[in-house]
Length: 361
Image (cartoon, rainbow, N blue to C red; front, top):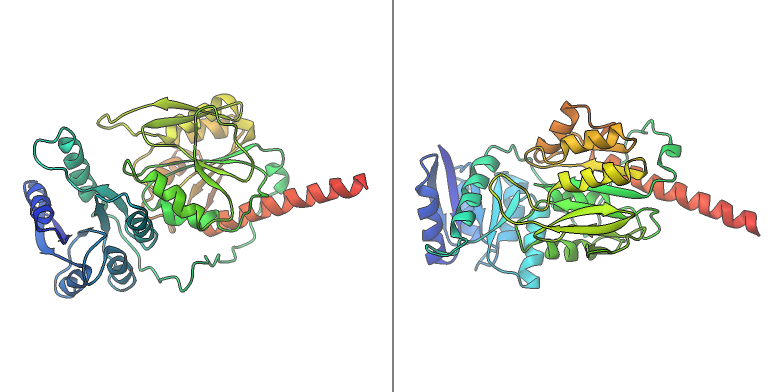
């Protein structure tokens, strides 16, 4: 039996969440509180397997509660919110960076045309994420990421010369990892970066804006037929698969289908294996399932450099674990090692550029 704590200040919403969750025979709601402080007090006496956490609440909001829980008594947390305003979107992204596993929309109510889809997603997420072994997170003292020096990687940077694109597939735990691995590069980075991030519909724009305020590189939602620029990051937008051809974005409309992901890492990596394999550095990072693992193997076999996140640093080692299992990853690295690798790629490219410019003088 999965034990759930609901943290929600709206009585109507909290009672409806309890109704949905309690109707599943595998789930037991053991608590229903109205603010983050009450949640922290509750878990001192009882430990749920997972917490559903509202964002905007009196006394203590969802972000502060998430930070305290993940730094003192780590428990899987799902952020449940209905807001899309910029302040609450930023709070949601900070909560994900602080250790919350995922974000999902609040239920719409019995009779709404999309209610069954949302209910199924909520129940599925609770069941899967309740099994994640979360680790204690030390809160950041400032907005800067401290990248740990890594063991010197036995990598020849000649391998990374003359590439044209970096591609990333990522899911649960993504915002924190993306912030970490791209924190050291600047707009001088020699390749564009394309990302498929599994996240609830309506939140990808908030994620892009949040990262835009933290990273030194411009972050965008990809647009149809857009030419990719070096030192820029592009996310697949809602309801669209992102494919790359001739270093231009092709968007393919997709929608909700049970068991199918939209957008999918599979679609991005497959397009690159057909059109840009020798030009690609492809990464598969933390996340549930196996989206993109087989296609990462295709990329490796076709000449791409392929990287999977290691188990120790992955919030959920599903996607990278599957890739490693089938031999799709040439390198298995932590986010800090990848951050240092990208920094060295940029430094090496700048040295080459400087040398060329000096030879012209």
